[in-house]
Image (cartoon, rainbow, N blue to C red):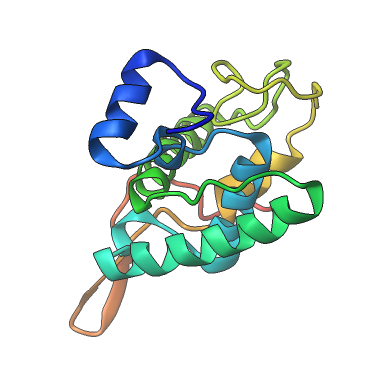
Length: 163
């Protein structure tokens, strides 16, 4: 692979599988914020995603990522569905943790999945706007139907929360 940047292990993996290792993860802040916007807009929640939905979501994500990168002359490495699946799981874990702790403020210099661990430097926000919105934008509560009646299948009590 010409121009490959990464570790020797990543290079070997890419050579043997034909998959660019950068296609397997959400790596930049642009990729992250696009993912979060699409998660909110399209209501991505892991319990609702099927193989077919992941393929369609990935095609849509890659198209939007290309449109985002093109004006900046950034080469777009299309993401593999696994990258979105893994990222959604990590985001949902972070959201669940933030809801349980009632902590929506990002006070770290880093701003990605969680303010504590990330490879991306960003401005310290000291506000709760971003995480408060994204924690409640898509319900992590699956509705179960029994006899035409719907009930929540979660012990997280956040239905009374006002944004």
